[in-house]
Length: 291
Image 1: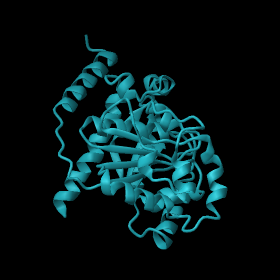
Image 2: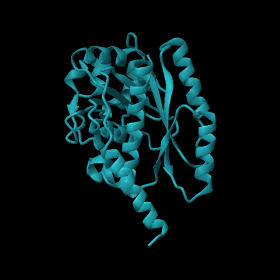
Image 3: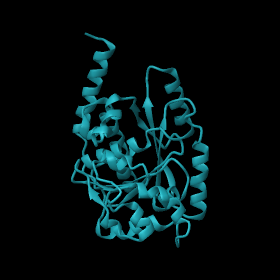
């Protein structure tokens, strides 16, 4: 029976089969992406943890650094982050080595997390008095990667441009921006691009916008399609082909302390995040071949 639902299910089955045949060789180079959007509620943390989990599923070693005081990335990765847990705060303020706080996520042997705790909320103010305050994360990460090589480091930022986000931009080589397919989606993006240019000029010349992921896409609305078209027109090389649909499963997963990849890996949302991860990883392979 040829109905829209039947076509949708057939399409999803075909995409799942395609994902099962994917084989990516990771080069051993570390890509450091900071996931940022100064507008809240765009699926920033959700995209960070699900792409990280999907990359780990492809065989990449992935470290997620949770720089958001809310600690939602730590929660989604099933990593303890109560007030007594050694966290990113101790690395930034107390000079604790990153290796002393990194925990393995129960989801995958390749997936690791540097958790956030509530103490991080005060770090913005405390960092002001620190020596080399914009570079503290980068130095800690450089030291960590010497003995703990990773294919990907994904940094989840708070939705504001303070010293925590500046530390993330200074530590990273790539910026990964999730954009929701809704009204006002591009609002604030020019501000974020201005911030990136400022960081490039003064702190990190190697930083560049590499990846834009369209989230919360509802194909039934003309608005979602218009937003997607507009973003693709402005950023043809950065926008991934994959779009992340609005999904109940994606929303439910964090309340179980899981990513949607672990919670329901066959759902439409999980398949889309796995496809996004393949695109991001494939760009690594292509770039390496071009060098």
